[in-house]
Length: 127
Image 1 (cartoon, rainbow, N blue to C red):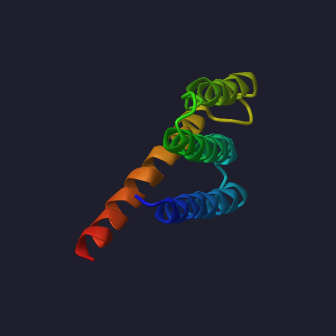
Image 2 (spheres, helix red, strand yellow):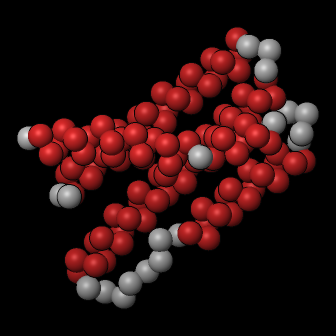
């Protein structure tokens, strides 16, 4: 995958996540399930941060592989730490954040990546 197409994938995935965050914010204000949607919003926000962090680390990693300096890690510990922080917030503020919503929100990144891959890999193979 070329660098330009990877940039397009990054933008597309972040755009989908932001649209989803807007929908969650609207749902939080419209429905009476505020703790659940607060949790979903918190989990999705952390998921978007982790996705952005992962994209940045992958770009740095591919640059370093191309230029052959010392290899570095992909930041797994920092992504786990943000997930842990979101879960701790959920435990401490149970009246505001539903833990199931946080966990579902944290998985949003993976769902977006899988859907994006499924939709656009078929387009690339057809052309």
